[in-house]
Image (cartoon, rainbow, N blue to C red):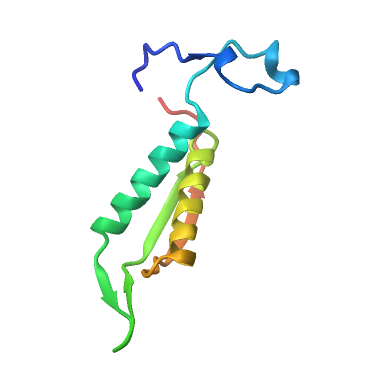
Length: 107
């Protein structure tokens, strides 16, 4: 998404009544975020090296997930939710450690 993007008209979405007056446009729809999370999850699983746990079991290499708080929190949690689903339902397990950092400024 480019910086000059204007976003989407709010009438394309189901906006809760208490947000209608405060909201002009939707910059990134939730479905697009979920689609990107799933794409990132698939890429992570594809490129992660497989490590033998024992003679019968192999796991993907350990992931250390670092979230830059405030702006990245929602994307971070959505991405980790996708990885948790993979761990629960997939044939491969991805060990994950999570941490976060806070920045006063992004400049």
